[in-house]
Figure 1 (cartoon, rainbow, N blue to C red):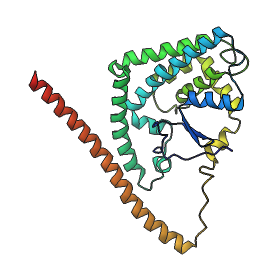
Figure 2 (tube, rainbow, N blue to C red):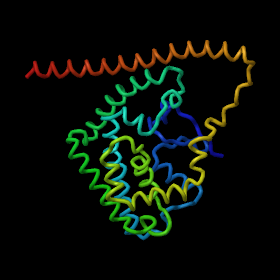
Figure 3 (cartoon, one colour):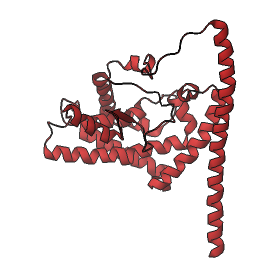
Figure 4 (spheres, one colour):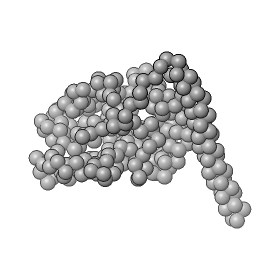
Length: 279
């Protein structure tokens, strides 16, 4: 039985990753490992029809998608967190399960997401390049994918394989960004790589026929018993009390997170200063 769990953008696997699943009591994180374990468990192999050469090409291309192109997209997100919220129509109040006003949540998101994202990008290595260089990297990756796909329905023929699944997961982040938000890499894919747009649409239709239901009517946390319905008077009083308590608690959490970031930044500055003095 599969359950959809609302993680509130905070609850992660023991590895600190999303997505993750729990299979027979065992926690499995990372998309590649999840696919591998589920394939083995249910003896359903997406790549069973591929030749040895095709498997090697698939492996190398997936590595490009997961370790290069996705970081190029992440660079844009870290640099323009406000556009992320607008472009994907993110309602943080709903996503985080908090009652604080979205204006406050958006403000803290832009600060923390931008700072943490920049640190991750520098640690990865791509963050040291200029915006123009990173954009060119992204265009080169899209060009390679487009030429590989050519006029085929999927990368290796008439049926999707693991490469198609991974490509859809990455390319859909470009394709489904609101057209009201400027993003050169999305525009490049639309104008220069129309076959990739077609690929995203085919994967959506083939693998997610219930797309609209998933996006609008999905019942999250179906494994948790629903509370008994309350009377109107009791509900209004309880919600007000819970709202006040939650706003205070979550406000404290956000403040602590910011203080932690400031503390880390201060420590880093002091360490650099000591090094300079030593020199």
